[in-house]
Image (tube, rainbow, N blue to C red; front, top):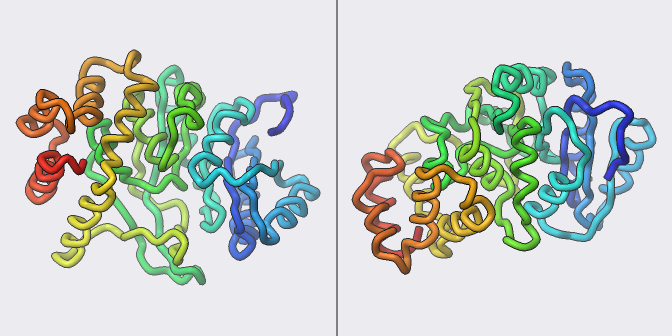
Amino acid sequence: MPGDEEQRMKLWVLISAYNGEKYLREQLESLPHQTLPGTGILVRDDGSTDGTRGILEAYRKQGLLQWTAGENLGWARSFWHLIRNCTDADFYALCDQDDLWDADKLETAVSALEKENPDLPALYCCDVRVADENMQLLKQHMTRPEKTDYPHALLRNLVPGATFVFNHAAMKRLRQYDADHLGIELHDWTIYQIIACFGHVVYDPRPHMVYRQHAGNVIGPAYRSARELLRKAGNFWKGSKKCSRSRQALRLEKAYGADMDAACRELTTAFAHYPEDRGKKRILLKRNCIGLKGLELFLFRLLVLLNRL
């Protein structure tokens, strides 16, 4: 990790790189064109075996970034290592190694976050344009969530982590989460949940980056037809076999339960313990505590009954 800066950075761009030689250069070339001054780039190589480290060293020698090498921790824990070990800044942005950012992405995000109370955690996220692996545009928009509150965050991650920019108050909350001890499956989902619980999520419906869709990271676009609605139902069911939502809520309860307000704590404990606690299960079944409707509400209650949430 970098040493103490003479002057605190305005913003750190945090990148976890792994065997990224195919796309990494293109993303790194887009970052110096950001219109926000005072931005630094910090990369952790997660045990790459290709030419990624050589690329990073070449850019370091040009003074464009700082990087560190580490053992292979996996995508989520590698990002969390960056979160817990980078030096302080006013803002922080997550960046994937294979996307392309618009020049105004960071400036737009920081402008929105500076309107928030700096003492409370705040997260900015935005829509993206979707392209194929050759950067041929597929869709002008990917997702537009109806709500970004904590109950919806417990259910699923609604926006790509590559769009995330958050303030230092949020970073202080995130650093309380010990991923090595508690475990972590999806770093962006965890970030989204923690900030939604203790602060505010700002969603920008305008895309400010291109998400590269390829075999290593395929995600689905927003649904706009009956066929895509069925795909959405499948995505809702996806992951339920391992009770990932319940497991995730249990981690949040262990890390933050004592600090949550009453409403967040009640819902978190209901998600975490409903399989063995009938009272918790009744909370999820009898109250529409998330504000779902139609097919989603039906599937949610079915997953609760089957202990598959």
